[in-house]
Length: 293
Image 1 (tube, rainbow, N blue to C red):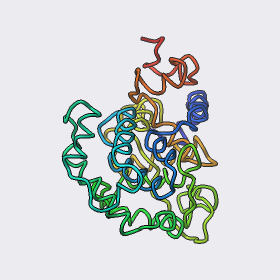
Image 2 (image 1 turned 135 degrees about the horizontal axis):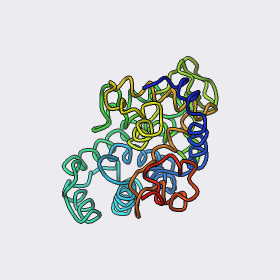
Image 3 (image 1 turned 120 degrees about the vertical axis):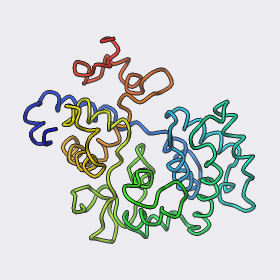
């Protein structure tokens, strides 16, 4: 692996194409935001963003979209957090009907995740105020209360949830917090949105499977070294490269790259978004470009 600076110097055309890829895809909403942003009440939007972030594991993006939609239809309005809580069998039935199977690594945890998010909302009944009155770092700490959000570093689900809350539409819900995406910068240079607090620190940028594939295939770790890096080294490389790809807002790069070679409804999502690769800036560099097969 070479440094980000050296990679940009040695591969200027690939780097330029990568920036174009980010610019082309950065406005595409992920399934969690897609479902949550269409709910009428702010508390619902935030609660379902937290639920979707906790559930997002080992399923395709269309799968998660269908599951969140089905769960919301079955448990609308405040049913996610009101008492009495739904029975485990009711929640599991929605999952089984959506996927036509119970074969999912997270299946036995879904009810617990649902109940845990509900409990979190009961502890923080005004979720908009909770976001507004806390820094991203404080939000990150609080999200440890939710089952399956993780309790120790790097907690990628919690990081993804925070960025989904504060990123501008359609990337996120566009909420303000005690720091966000457009104002001051933390020590790592990640831009944040206007809030009254200073000295806050953003959580690491989301390092999705799509971004991991991108870094290892078309990024600074394309020599096969990515898999050998420690988790902290992977995150450091990702943050540095995201900042190089989108200096004004590195989250745009992290968001766009999640769609790289990620399975969608009819093949890879990036293919679907680039007219079967024909409009993809990375066409000549990607061995998975449709016309190359």
